[in-house]
Image (cartoon, rainbow, N blue to C red; front, side):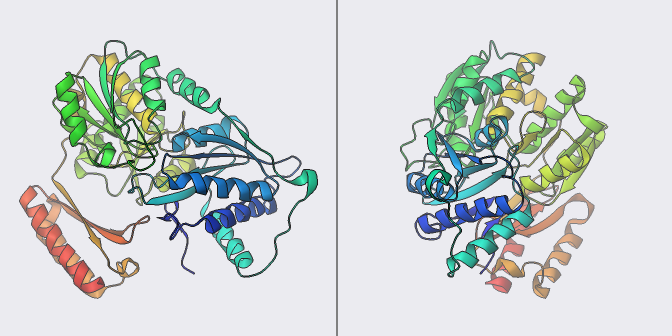
Length: 452
């Protein structure tokens, strides 16, 4: 069996790849593995379970709750909330486990399961591997040790989670947002109630789009993967800035008053300078992935800040931050982690902090984001290829070497297999956009022919 867990939990087409049986089985396995690890020792275990608005989340939530309760875990069902809200509540409520049902920015037919350990942190790889192994062992016939009577888990709705999380977001802001007009694109997702409420409580005038989830429209032409609607709305309403989330609101992208995109690298740069000024940027260091634009690296060097780069995936950014005690990290895609206030990427918190910087300085978002110049970067997703061979193909290696020779010191090439989708990503940076496009397409063609 191939590894079920990718870089961000278990994902697939709901009711095809990700079935109720799989959701139930993984939940029972997670409970048993954490019990074996001593997490539940000396007390009755509790789990927080949340989801995004996808229709499939309704039956998957039922399966997860049933699995946990059948394994003797009490469940607090928090309903539709962002992924970082589930992580936060897992921590503040002292729960032993958190479970989020979401496929993030993926299209509606997909869904996913993400587990959080005590404290709201993502499970370690070895625990995920153990959960898979235990799940497979029992799927093929080994009986579960099941509690009975008073030993079974109890289930209740925890409606207080919404207010608890929103209050946390507003409380950690360095300053209020009075005088700002902000457009929020909620991607018809998990932050459709949370984000507007938080921005309003913080003093901003709020305009919302993409905030009417019906279970089917999540990420459909809106949100952080489709910024055109937000660009238009910001200009139409004369807003100071726009904030876009993905389906589970663990990421944030922005647009300035003119409708120009401000990506995760630029957001990181703005927040890094704000945190250095406030004395909260520990080690004067930012953690980012190898996908970060070369312009971000140059800007951090110019500003006298250190940059630590990791493999792609916010879990690896978080690991580096925790290992070395750094306070800020993130990805170009908009996953930004402010470790003093969140245990995972939090799109609403990121948007609030970005808006707070605009309010505090009196500068426009465009002016603040101008701290870095983005070098032209082209990303091509090559689908329907054997992504497992991306590091072993001799033909592909030769093509990459030739591309790097052509780009020289003014650009770079990065090929990686997606951790959440069946594709290979080809990224090329160059001083000239046409050169970047040409090299990227040439490499994409080689990927297709060599790995197809």
